[in-house]
Length: 173
Image (cartoon, rainbow, N blue to C red):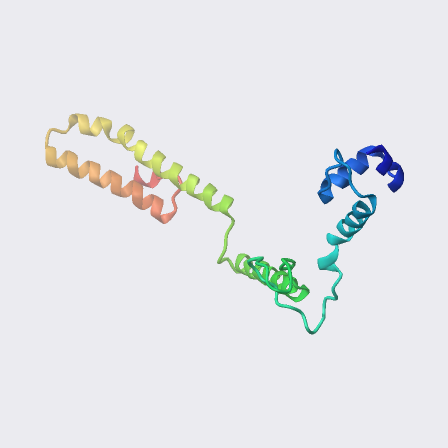
């Protein structure tokens, strides 16, 4: 290991890492020239897919599945035009969403949740206020049909007040 590190003019740690990456067992004896060739090939192997021109006419088809064919390993890097197409698609989607928001067809989730909470609170308050308004009247009433009519009338008034937009339902009182 020390001899190869001096031969390659690198540190022992770098030599062991590079030999491990190219598949040479440095614990056994190995050929320095073979190790140099493998290291040089490995250094340029990572850049190989990016050395081809972007607009080359006879470009081999890119296999999206990444299968190998007779020409060698498939290249998974997308073509420039494909990347541009995706970029324009996302820009168009963003423009569509902004347009729908500006025209009122699309609203923010937080605003919808806040409005739903507000309406739910109004309904709850309107319904829970009914017993305090009717308790005295119903206590004095003995006719079951009259009690039913009073309750139905009060509930209907509270819900109709909410439907028209009266925030407190006080019109029902």
